[in-house]
Length: 288
Ligand code: SF4
Ligand code: SF4
Image (cartoon, rainbow, N blue to C red; front, top):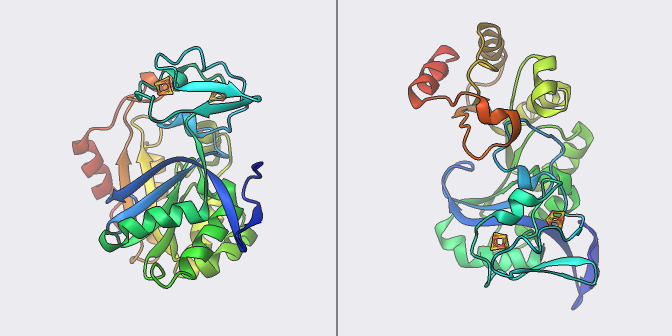
């Protein structure tokens, strides 16, 4: 069976769709409200200097460079396609370090139905499902098909369907997913347009549009701030964040995350980490 990203085919009389999945966590309490089943989708349209999971940014081009690097012979190249043997893998991450395009050979193609089967096992213990990434909306066809399948499943449709996003999706696309999405958590990486572009490679115009639109239709669950000392915690940024958040409904949760220079690459390795104490002070200073 050939793979088409997010495109449907018919199997056993059922239309199904597959996505490229970098990781699944059956129980998480940090990816939205309550206990959640989290699916991390591969691919991102930002290129953040401070990315903690750079191997989720790009799609594998099957160059095969990582095969020889694997000490456990868990990787092979078959018919020009990388193949990962999870049973042999020892999670050393050497393949991630060597990949020249910030990808991973351990990404798996999973159908909506395969994921639903995993969720049925976890469902007595969870409040909902979060699609994260990478940037989940890069695989929008999969996102819509997956949430539609959850909402159409009488045993699962009590679960909330949330997206964890960088907010870059255009409004027309948000509108198309809204009927099957219960809400979203949106990252606000910087208020200043130039700073945002320097940090992420993209401007923040669409991020503001997303936040304001989702807030207006009561689908904005949380705004997330990742605070990096001396980069986006200046007095001007802080004041701009405070003013902007004050314009939003106070029911919307604001979450401050502390930057850590562990697990980053490039120049961000030399950036300062934010202590828990300074994180608490920051949160206090932007209190609405
Ligand atoms: S994961 Fe990276 S190194 Fe390995 S085959 Fe894919 S693109 Fe090449
Ligand atoms: S993480 Fe797994 S697949 Fe990658 S190099 Fe290590 S053992 Fe091999």
